[in-house]
Length: 354
Length: 184
Image 1 (spheres, rainbow over the protein chains, first blue to last red):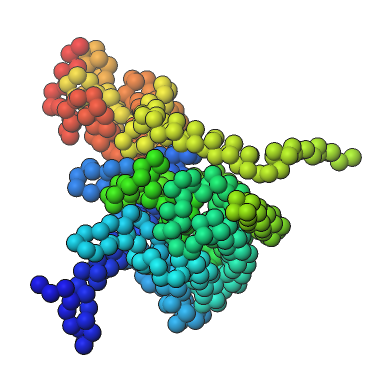
Image 2 (cartoon, chains in turn orange, blue):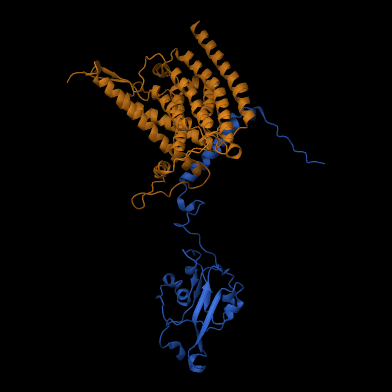
């Protein structure tokens, strides 16, 4: 068996390409199914936090309920078979594009995250992230993609041609853009600490001490801004039943609504993965030098699930901020703290070098 | 004069917001863990079709027309219940079952038609109070649903059978030919 095959006159190496396809499938399928499970986890978690029972009625094959996990299948089926209603007054093209614009950037952000330790086999090196290290973008890539998420919400609200949706889009855009600055400032401090953009190198740099202990201030800023980026409580300004109906979701139905919903959960997963990679050592396990691919994937999964759970937990604990409080927090608190953290970090590095 | 609302003075710890948020998170976490280890039966939610709360004594649910041991109806068609009923939901038509004498236990009538319109009934229990023979009881079945108005109009034998399964009695669909209770 030759190592390459010719496709339209281009020599394509089989094993790296097959590995790339396998990674893409695994990440896409993994993130999608995790997002679906999170919709269930959110409902069930909310119920249990509030001393309720939560969804437990859906059952398949006789009386097989399994804590209501089949509700997510029922929900998905329902969304697929619902009438795909397009109101008369919407902008037809944008109305179709908006769910994709929300969904694709949420999905793309995960591509850079290393979800396990790289390993070699038969002369090849296999990296457990969809985009291999040394690509020159590193952690700038998820930041750029996260910025694109604004377009999903804003396109959805603009296409809806509805005052409430429009207000929601304005609010969502304003707060996502404001909090991106705090987010980026926290990440720059990480770059300084690690001396690299690349997530693989950032994880390597954390082998001694996780960044959450090295930069607690930066972690707090990043964590809070991450909540704002995912559009979840306490910063869910794009929605709000009491003020703007369902916000940018108002006119959507069927699987378009499903995609917009799913993209929120995928955002949650991606941001959790970012938190894990930047502040909690990614796939590394404390006091284990070389965990190997399987153990490292398990460690990454546990950390990821924990932070997804934290997102749900915080959502059902905190009330929402008022809009001016949100802007106050973003511009007058997060921005100065982010700068302070950056300068402190730079000064500490300067001290240690000099 | 208006009420002076005392402003809450926040300490510096509260002003950081992080500490109060941590407190709130710990509250929800304790609720979460507590609810997680509580067995289903001890939770506050009664999962209705699977679990039912015990019905209290004195509850007035679906009626039953009581019967004698030989499955003949206790009702003597005296119209007391129909008169007492504030909702006018009871319809009775009487029938002669012989002459009044001591051998028959002083009974000469029984209902041919005994109909209760459950859609009109207000479950006040006046019929039960009024009945001289203890022939109508309001018992504890509260699951009264059906698919048409006609089904909600229960006749004499329907009313005699309402609790047949629960009491392990046979279902009645006709009056016995030779009522033995006459020879009491």
